[in-house]
Amino acid sequence: MQVEQKTAVGFEAGRAERVVTGSRVVVLPSARRDRLAALDGLRFLAALAVVLFHFVGQTRWAMIHIWGLPYQSLFPQAHEYFAFGRLGVDLFFLISGFVICMSAWGRSPRDFFISRVTRLYPMYWIAIVVSACVVYTVDTPFGRPNPRVLFSNFTMLQMPLGMESLDPVYWTLWPELCFYLAFAVVVWKGLTYQRVVVFCGVWTVAAVLTPAAGVPLLTVLVNPASAPYFIAGMAFYLMYRFRPTPVLWGVVGMSWLLSLHFLLNPHGRNNWATWAPWRGWLVLVVTVFFLLIAAIALGWTRRIRWRGLTVAGTLTFPLYLLHDVIGMTIVHHYGTKVDPWVLVGVTVAGLIVLSYLVQRFLERPLAKFVGRSLRSAAFDLPLGRPRGSC
Image (cartoon, rainbow, N blue to C red; front, side, top):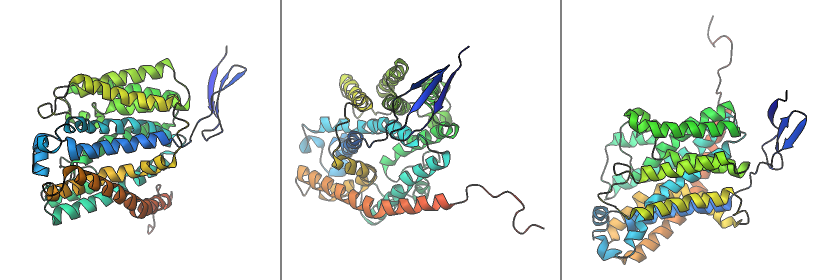
């Protein structure tokens, strides 16, 4: 009787995996870790879409509240197109599933934990400090929140604590944290093709059943509306790392259908009372997102290696976190004094430059410091008698 055994012989570039079946050894394609410039470019475009949505495509009330004028007199033709920029968050989640699976492969749980903390918290803390300085010292559309909001936001756990976000864009960080927490279990067991596929399947079932369960805590943890994007991203990475299979295409297809189901839900995340575009456009935009990640997973973008895209990718998180409070405050003060398109162009360009400076001179050094501190920390207490005991 032949026994099939899968043995990993390396996950770095230039190494491969082999499958031992009886006396035969089948070598799978080498695992790839090359930098994906196209993915960095897409990540930056997603952030830019969200930024422009906040400037040009928000709801009628928000535009009057921030600009001081209705959108009809500001961006009569452009407004309805830039309103789709809110879907840039869904592209974020799709990319995140791909990237987290890629970056965690071959890492220990400790390394995975450190990489996620150093990726999220340093820039987030910087953004909290900057946003707090703005909202508590300048006249902004955001008011002056209770200091309790500020303290809870520093933890990044304001959503389960039942507190509002200091900046509304921070809501996306909780689905990311839940994804990291759940995926850490798979990292702890050791990432393999089969385990990631099982994880995708279990999360899909949970996302389907949770809305019917009516348990708020379960809904907060599972994030049904966001889950299909993370799941599809992981499946796309498995295609990229190994090869496309019917199972992976099935996972992607199911995730695509569920993402549209939750997006078109009249009681879902979108407020249909303030934004109700033709449903076909929503289907088209989300489908394009999936097709773009599929092109990367299938290797069709391998020749795109422009270093500028990689640099743009590093600006995504700072730009996303900093643009709302700073940008909306600028618009609030100068919206009726400067040509709207000039104001948008200058402000967005300034925010991109600011994001580069913050990433280069604040986030990067702080992330290195936090990483070194965590790596040198004693995660496990030494065995033996406690100090000072008799």
